[in-house]
Structures are given as structure tokens and as C-alpha cells.
Image (cartoon, rainbow over all chains, first blue to last red; front, side):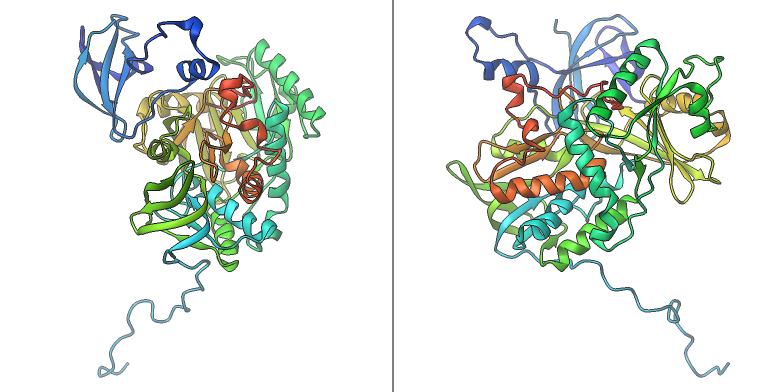
Amino acid sequence: MQLIACPWCGPREETEFSYGGQAHVAYPEHPASLTDEQWAHFVFFRDNPKGPFAERWVHAAGCRRWFTAVRDTRTHQFIGPSELTS
Amino acid sequence: MSTTTAPNPPGADLPEHPDHLWDDAEPKKVYDVVIVGGGGHGLATAHYLAKNHGITNVAVLEKGWLAGGNMARNTTLIRSNYLWDESAGIYEHALTLWEGLEDDLGYPILFSQRGVLNLAHTEQDVRDSVRRVEANKLNGIDAEWLGPDEVAKVCPIVNVSADIRYPVQGATFQPRAGIAKHDYVAWGFARRASEAGIDIIQDCEVTGFVRDGDRVTGVRTTRGTIAAGTVALCAAGHTSVLLDMLGVRAPLQSHPLQALVSELLEPVHPTIVMSNAVHVYVSQAHKGELVMGAGVDSYNGYGQRGAFHIIERQMAAAVELFPVFARAHLLRSWAGVVDVTPDASPIVGATPYENVFLNCGWGTGGFKATPGLGWAFADTVAHGRPHPLVAPFGLDRFVTGALVDEHGAAAVAH
């Protein structure tokens, strides 16, 4: 089992965390003006790179805080420090 | 024995190596159709392009070796007991083709129709299961609801006592469901396609596309550029990598999906058992291994391996349902890369490029669809429009909202 570095609690076992998918997906600034296609892309479409991927994690069985981390999807290895973003 | 003659080298007395089943082709400069992905779906599409449509100037490009991706990593379950009409249509078409596939391919595929039990463990499971049985019957699919005692008759090793954490309340049963030998399926399709003159090109990874406006005119590969009249994508978990080269977005997330086998055992398990609530599915392969799988690992990954705690959880479920498995040893575990969509249904059909067709998003359930998809996708490629069986699965459904929501509704184990 791999260890994931929670920015608050330090390295903990993977089973303490839940996955939140792609990071930096902002809610549309003008929701009322979106076309159906733009809504579809916001709701359903996410990047799926083979390589480094910035993604959301929550330390569900620990401090319960969300953070952003970059992980290489080829090796599943975390790259660099996790960011404390809300 | 004389001491003056050289001893026979090892293997010298063995019969000649059997004929190769297919030719390991060198790429030509141009093809009418280039299929990207030499797994089950790509090979089946090639076979039906030749058989049903007489299109044989076709290349199947495979980045590794033939059928070495998910086709070598699945748990070989074949069934069609899906809830919605759209899914029932394509999966039942596939099951009907499976039933005649040995004759069609002239090759043994060890298709064994031993039935599938989908267990229900809660009142809600029971309601959903009975609903699905009735939906299946309306679509002409064999399905019945069994109580716990009848479950024990079909599969005596399932623990149906009330004394477990999630007691078995009953199960749906599809008698025509079964398993097949996945390698033989791939080899059978490859042999037929190769006989028809189709080039199967291994060790040939696609690295880019040659574009001309809204058409793709060629495929760049590690073995040179190949011109193509039509391009058909059958790359499963790596579809997003190809679509990124084309600048096309699709709602796919690639996850590791693990499976494992036990050591070889005497025949103890006569059918297939799936349980979504406690999350495991089990059958016994022809040789005797127990073949087990469960859901995907939660995070995206192309690594063809998953985390151990997923296997641990699925083994806990297996041992609770099948106490007889407690002393079986794990022989081997592995993972494939599966492309999962938001509604747990595949994406098949048109792309923004007029001569590029997409087949992906089968997630955890692509093997069972192999002949049905190959049939309908070949027709789609040959006529340049979606075959009616795959028309509900277009990429545009995520914009129109006409989703085919099979998450949990169709005994789909995710």
C-alpha cells in the first residue's frame, strides 16, 4: 500500500484517503449563459492524461481536509509536495 | 550408443511447430481502413469487415502483442442481463453471436454456458433485481428470480445461511450466460481476419495522426506513416491518449481493474456468481482456477497494477460467500486499464472527424460485447454511420442528456 502525504498529518496509508478526480475545475462564472455543450463539458468531461495529473484528495479517515496533489498516472507515484487549496 | 555421433539436441524429437494462426504482417503504405488496437474489439471488427462487408484492405495496429492488453486481463464473463433496452440490444446481440462463434471462426473458444447468478443482499437489491428480471424478459432475454434455496441448488457452495453479515436474499439467474477462453477468442478472430487478407501489425504504436481539415488522412506510427481511408479506434483504456492527439475530448477516465486466480482446484463451482453489494465475482476456469474480480481502483491509472487493499476486500467478500475458498491459495493477480464513462455505458460512433470512428468506454465489461460490438462497429465503419445497435451510445449523448445509465442498475460490478 502506498503512503500519501497529507499536508496536515504527514504520510498516511492510502486507505485513509478518498479520491476527488481532476483538480482546478472551476465552477462556470456565468452559469446562465452556458450552452448545453459547455455544460456537458463542465459536468462530464475531465482530462485523462497518461503522465502527471493534478488531482483532488481528501484525508477522509484523518483530518478530513481536501488538498491538491500531482501524481503520475503511469506509475501511480506522487510528485512533489501536496498543496493546501480549499 | 556410439560415442562418435553427436547427441540429439533437446526438442529434436518433437513434432514440427504447428502452422501459425495468423501472419505477422509488415505495414503497407496505405489501407482502406486502419483499426487502432489489436485486442478483442479490434480483431472482431476486422473479422466482420471482411465477412459481412467484403472490406479486406484493412490493417489492425497493435502497440504491443496481439490481444496482450485487456483481452488477456479480463475475467471472461459473458452475459446480457442489462436493464435498459439499449444495453440489452447490443449485449444480447453479442450473446447470440457467441452461441455460434465456434462455427463462424472454425476454432474452439471453449464457450461454456453455465449461467450467472447475480446475488441480492438487501431489500433494495431484491426490488432492483426483480425489476431487472422483468425488463430482461420484455427484451426476450432469459432471466429468472431465484430464492435462497433455489440459489443453493444452482450453486451449492454459496453460503445462503442467515448467519452472515449480508445474507443472500435471492438472485437473478441467466442460464445462457457463460465463460469463454479469451486467448482462443482473440486467436480465432485473428486467424479468420488474416485468412481474409487483413494485416495484423504488432509492435506498432500510434504516435500521431495526419489531419486535413475535418478528415484524418493517415496514422503516424513507430513503424512509419500509414495512409488510411477510414480510422477506427479500438484502444480501450488508452483511447484518451489517442483522442488527445486528435484534439477531441471524451468523458473517459482510465482506471486499474484488478483480477486474480487461485491455484488449480477440482471442479467446485458450477456457474458464475456476482455480488455487487459485497463486491466480488467468481467463476471457475476450465483448467480449475477460481477467477475473481471486483471493482476498479478509485484513482486514474495507466500502470496495469492496482492496490493490495482492493484485493484484500474482495477476498474477504469471497470467503464470506464461499467458505470453501478459505484455504485456496492466490496464484496470480494483475490489472488492466479500463476506460470508464459517467453513465457506465460505452461510447461508439462518430467523432468530429468524418472518417474517424470511436469505440471506447466499455469500462469493466468489454469482453462480453466482443462479437456484438465487432459486428455493429464494422457496419458503422463500412457505411459511415452508426449501426442502430450502437446509435444510442454516441458521444453526443452527454450533451443531449440521453444517458444510458447502467451504474448499478444492470448488475454491473464497478
